[in-house]
View 1 (cartoon, rainbow, N blue to C red):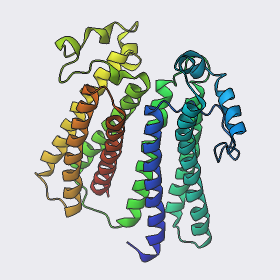
View 2: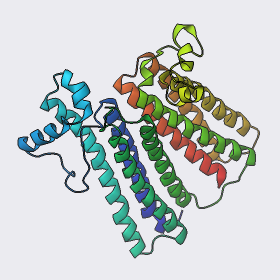
View 3: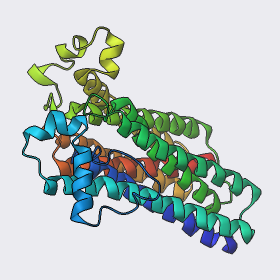
View 4: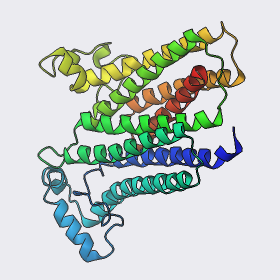
Length: 340
């Protein structure tokens, strides 16, 4: 690692930390049903929440015009105090997004001016810049889907927003790792191929985690290892929608079945990576990456089971999402060490 890269590495890893915070607060926002509390988006004027009771009342009256209040909260004795609570989490989620933007752009311009970035790193950072902007668009695109008729955001858009946040984090970490470990590691082709497949399947599992969250599919079939009525594949997996394909991407039972089944696949692939690695000579970092990956995947699997059994209490749902983040971190690190 070159000394002149130290500040750039700290900058990129700080971005990873902010993205982690963003995902955590996003999880709280979703689990507290706070995501539709801010009904418009302004780059500057939304930077701070309403500062007077009059402004709060105006914001609350605006919120009352939209489906979430008219179809759900109007029946729950929903007060201004309740509104302030859900507003805070959505505002805080957006505020962190603004902080991330500033924390990326300002140092990026500085490092460009000081010529601290190689041409290759500049290209990667430009990609990150566009990824960050696109993620902001995806957030508003998701929220808009819950402000028209249905007081729930599209589970497709939610999964896209969530997964792209994870991918943005993984790419930011990858760029940082390129600078931390500039020397190439020994590439073991069977392990690299298996790690790449595992990474892709993990991303698919995260997508389905978004589907489960968006459809509230974790609130049904709260049994394990079988679904309701002692069935491995519950009958409802096939009958909620008109076709099997729609059942597996839109049906609550179908989506949950895919997510819980794919969990076994992820565990199996990581175990395969572990046992295959025993047949080869690995560096200490490669060994550590795979060992940590095995530990985290079992923790995540266990959390997933308990989250399901207890019908997604806020703290377990959030912890499950956080552990998914750690799992992707370990997977990204391991893949990087097996690819360079």
